[in-house]
Length: 326
Image (cartoon, rainbow, N blue to C red; front, side, top):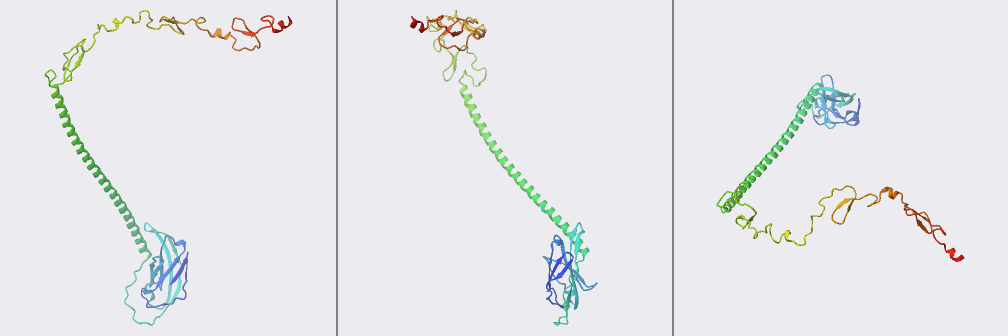
């Protein structure tokens, strides 16, 4: 049997289907709901009278009609409703009207099968069950989170153990290297002590070793000895020294440092003194009085003070025309 549910109205969509008595767990009802029922738990309601009625939860919109409501011929009323429960309280419910379905008498047998009764599912029980369901689901989520956390702790512990093992291995290697370095150091020290045994009869090297020598020192590959002047080095009185030169320059007449300030000049003999402004070099005032550009054209003449101007024909020079007139 097929039904369509829109808000509070239910309609039967297979009116040609005949329903008879004697059916046990064999009549399937299909319900289609509009979007108003999204997120709700939906149920089918089968009603014969006040004492004979059943509410059955729909799974994927379908259920089987309880056989108890098909025992007797007559009218079977079919309805539906949806409900939503939070914290053991109903927060939303949608109900419908009912559709009358005729149940005809079957002739197959006058003896009814001994079938187990269909469990009743009342709204109050359903509300309590849904509350238990939510509690169980919440507990399952918490358990899953704790399991994930435990796995994370286990991974962290394993990583820490691996790190500790690696550090222990590194420490063991470092200890081995230190032991090897100690042996090498002891061997080197033994060699040094052995070599030092021939130095002045002492087998201990210290800051006081062979400090009884004076003057320049030399080594012969095994010992440190005093160097001999004239053999290992030239003495300061050697005839080939600087004092023996006959052409060495006279440094006594040279100025050892410059004490003058400002612009300097040299005298050609090694001395440096301050230059005189206006004598050794031109001052800005002297330069400013000089003509810096020649504007005149033709033959030029100077006035002896830095100014140049145009020369005057017949006064400063004889013009070519004078000779042509003569």
